[in-house]
Image (cartoon, rainbow, N blue to C red; front, side, top):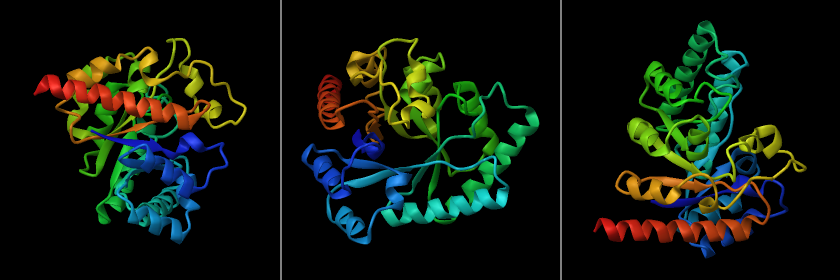
Length: 275
């Protein structure tokens, strides 16, 4: 399994992209999961240096406005497609709207599916993939709704970003859920939390706020998710996947470095047992 560094971990840090690239290379990350805000501001020389190094861009993580008219949504999609091509990735990650599956009326769901089909058609022209993230307060907030959504969109460019924490937040077992959704999983996000009553710390309004609380954000193997079991039971399925370490707390350099090494150690242990 390849391990990617999420640049969104540095959303509140004065950090040049060159410095971030040097850090990722020094810590032997395989890829970068580039936040759209960062991607938009990359200069040509930074893109060139990125291409010169043995590190790939696994995904462009950004958002689309499903409340906007379809013409606006498709223009946003075209802009994201061009941005993805510029930084060298075919995976474009978005959230499926801003309403939970339980809040969506059937007409709203039909409209969302139609919009997602349009987005997939745009990206497919450039041989890119749309990755819907499993995330609360979206149409992909439960395994059942996510599975239904992919089936309804019914396009080969429609895939999933499997966020392990949000799967647990939905009440599902991550190993069982992964096996159920495996045919359409393209990428993973890895993070954890100290207690089950702290999921709200990852609400976008809190995470993106410089003064938001970070209480409950813990290292990957110190939280409520049994990642050792996750990697052990899914070692074969994860072999060709890329998983991003998503850290929203303080001291991202130290924490990402530590989690990256521990993930590699656990994966190596699992692989040796498998052999």
